[in-house]
Amino acid sequence: MQNEPITTVAFQGARYAFSEIAAKQFFGATITCIPCKSFDNVFETVVNNQADFGIVPVENSLTGSIHRNYDLLLEHELLIVGEVRLRVEQHLIANPGITLDEIRTVYSHPQALEQCRLFLASLPNVEPVASYDTAGSVKMIRDNKIMNAAAIASRLAADTYQMQIIKEVIEDIPENFTRFLILAVADKKLGPADKTSIVFSMKNIPGALFKALSVFALRDIDLLKIESRPLRGKPWEYIFYLDFAGNMQQEGPQNAIRHLKEMTNLLKVLGSYPSGRSGENNK
Amino acid sequence: MQNEPITTVAFQGARYAFSEIAAKQFFGATITCIPCKSFDNVFETVVNNQADFGIVPVENSLTGSIHRNYDLLLEHELLIVGEVRLRVEQHLIANPGITLDEIRTVYSHPQALEQCRLFLASLPNVEPVASYDTAGSVKMIRDNKIMNAAAIASRLAADTYQMQIIKEVIEDIPENFTRFLILAVADKKLGPADKTSIVFSMKNIPGALFKALSVFALRDIDLLKIESRPLRGKPWEYIFYLDFAGNMQQEGPQNAIRHLKEMTNLLKVLGSYPSGRSGENNK
Image 1 (cartoon, rainbow over the protein chains, first blue to last red):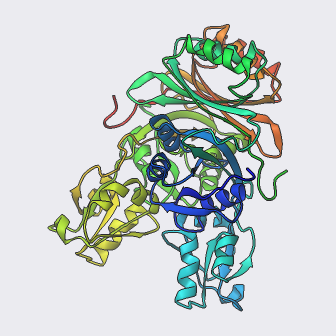
Image 2 (cartoon, chains in turn blue, yellow):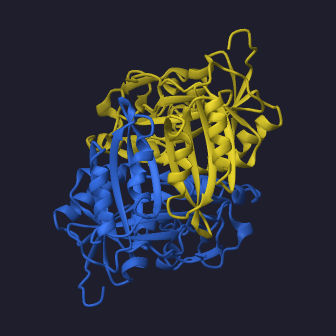
Image 3 (cartoon, one colour):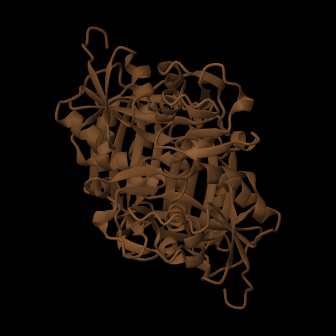
């Protein structure tokens, strides 16, 4: 990545969303992040060369794969050039000097409130109130100087708005990770590619998936992820998401993919890229 | 299901949530639904015999598998006894007599607002405002007689509160289905079981998954779903969710599961049950 003038990364969400945190974890703090209103906009921004890279979440450890972004990968000619695993940590944030027992209202996105349900239930006299986004709630209680309220958001949001973290890591289930993909119009070679993602579909004849996986097993290629997704309106056809160890410069994966094409209706190689190391608190 | 005094079904969410709609689609309108604050509460309510059945979402066509409910299935001794596929349809709902051009504010859960993003963007002078739940927004604009606002929610919410649907099916991506599981403390035999769900884990040695699937392929047993999920802190170990055609009364599946146990660290049969037909608009 050295000597590469990395300039702009498109992401979906408000400023200081977890996608922006993931982008900065991957590229460093000096990049320019472009907030987009939707995942579609992220893809379009990269396709139209208005950003060097895009970043989208594809998988969360609690809520599963984000199929919409796999659909967009099939619809657009973008390559996966990297990945980031981000620990999603929620904190209780208030104006400086405020203590926990002064809080009467907690604002955040409903998903964040839900993730911290047990913590909120443990606070007497506190009402959770839904808002449109996590970081925006921090800004709101700061701008309006609401002293008996707190927000649930990331550390970046607290730091950005110079607000105080009253209580750290308040999620009920702390093992909450999100996997993000880095996208580009062409292969940018952000490190040694040791992982490849593909999407394919085949008729669901008995043993079809077994035959598909045999192309990897016969070549001792390790599978890192496999997921089936039924195709709507075609009850016996499936899309498969598969990640395997290796890259498309290697002979084994090349042969496996050529072999797999003999039995698939559709097959798209989404990219070979360096597998992501996890962020903070990773074991 | 005839002659079975079906009484109570526990679900997560506010009244008239999509889980309650799914429960009524499955059991009929005469059941008593018990709202629970969390998925954990749904499981506990059924385990403690405070409800005959529980219903939980496990998979959404846009947002993927809900891993939390698979975790809870591993933690509790409940059986899957049925499934429901529900088309999630969002409607724009207002007080009777109100027209679209009078609307200035649209209230709903942020996920519903997000699902209808393109529709909302097409309305001039309308501000989306996040609220805690979809049906609750309908009740709120009714109780407070807010005439220049609408809510986004289900048809059941509109009908329940005798409110008007101004515009039907306003999601950007209409193919939005959620799959729910029906849970009970013992097998209730709600129909001929043609599908079985299992969870298993094995060391990720090369070809391990291939060998696991061979136990089904060798017996011509059809796979209906497969999904891998990495185990946190154990980078080379995975949990697999697998659904196959058949039930555990049959010799083939019994042999396959005994064979699979030879190579797994963990294996749990979650239940054999009738596969779900989809609700409205299903092809």
